[in-house]
Amino acid sequence: MSQQHHHSAHEHHHHADDSHGPDEGLSQILDLDAEILEASLSAVHADIAALIDGPVRRILDLGAGTGTGTFGLLHHFADAHAVAVDGSSDMLEHLRRQAEGLGLADRTTTVHADLDEGVPELDLVDLAWASGSLHHLADPDRTLAQVAAAIRPGGLLAVVELTGHPRFLADDAPGAAAEAKAHELLAVDRTVDMPAMGSDWGARLARAGLVVELDRPIVVDLAPPLPDVAGAYAFAILTRIRGAVVERLGADLDDLDDLDRLLDGGPSDVRHRSDLHVRTQRQLLIARRPASR
Ligand SMILES: C[S@@+](CC[C@H](N)C(=O)[O-])C[C@H]1O[C@@H](n2cnc3c(N)ncnc32)[C@H](O)[C@@H]1O
Image 1 (cartoon, rainbow, N blue to C red):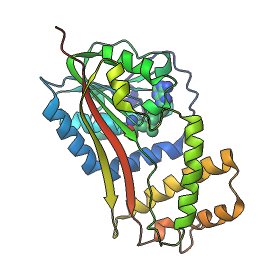
Image 2 (image 1 turned 90 degrees about the horizontal axis):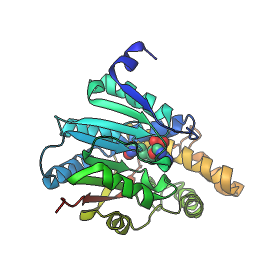
Image 3 (image 1 turned 90 degrees about the vertical axis):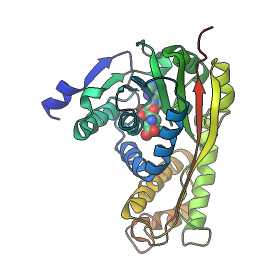
Image 4 (image 1 turned 180 degrees about the vertical axis):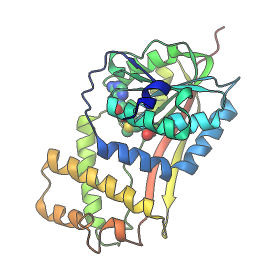
């Protein structure tokens, strides 16, 4: 860690318990995700630009992770400053390093805070962004009400939520059954651990007093031949899925053998295959805080 990071990006401490701990696997996935989703996210930025009234000067990124949302929005909205909030100091550290590398450190402020304890009090923002973070929250409705209050009247909230985990193998490809089985197990796990995942975000935004103006899927469906980043992405995601399935569900060993062949460096390893697809789907919602009457 160099001194520079501290000089050019500021960190404010709120009461964050940092229970997330270091998670190299997740930061790697989030960075690869940024590459895989680049074109889709540009289209999302264009959707926001088409809906926003007035300039975008202040952006709030909720559960910012490694900064994919923050940096994409700062590139699109050239006059904006972003406040990136996350409960993990490791994520914020990673985000600040990236901000330095991109020359965006002086347009980025990081705030270490647990959103379950409240949205940090800041000046009103023109645009709030929450990608892949709301389903982690203990009470998304409570947080959304606070987020709505943090947006200027007429300003926007953009939400991106996963509707499933990325898939990589065609139905008849070697290992496809193991991938499918792992996803089945994961789906059970998800409903236990993160009940808000896959919920009706439109209804939740409306309950927070926001008016949904756009609700559409973001569909990524990449077919071979794909660049190496697809293999790295598949490897990172499947490794994480394997971890979840093994630790929490005690999956049966035959299924694991097949799954392991996708990760073992051999001929079926997803990093060395030419038949990989990348299929992932998210939901995008853009909602407005009504202008005061
Ligand atoms: C799946 S990542 C998404 C990161 C980023 N928004 C993106 O789209 O790449 C979810 C992020 O939310 C953060 N997070 C989860 N629960 C949180 C909470 N209660 N308070 C603050 N951040 C939280 C995690 O630390 C993680 O960085």
